[in-house]
Length: 103
Image 1 (cartoon, one colour):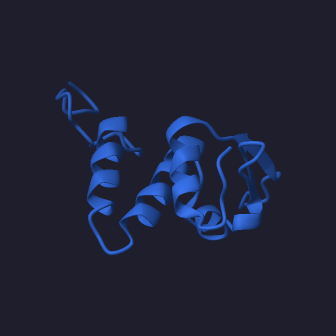
Image 2 (tube, one colour):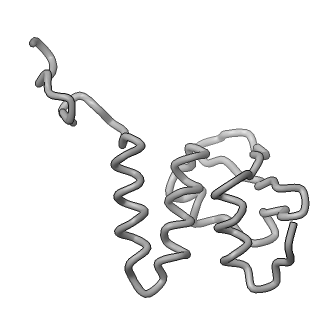
């Protein structure tokens, strides 16, 4: 097969992680000292397509838990955007924020 390896787990032509690879990364991140924080950052970055700098620049005031939204200042001349939070992402943030109350 020209331009690829033909295997199901081939990474030669890919520039992104599969969902299964991200799940393994989240699991591994969850096993360190700051596991919940790190796993939550990876989950948010993957689900919302954030660049590393965009994740690192997130602050608690960027997250509206009551309305289940996150505001992202995009890098590389991108327009700021607001993303919905639901399910696992919202629960992970609620568990991480000591000031959070039930939504």
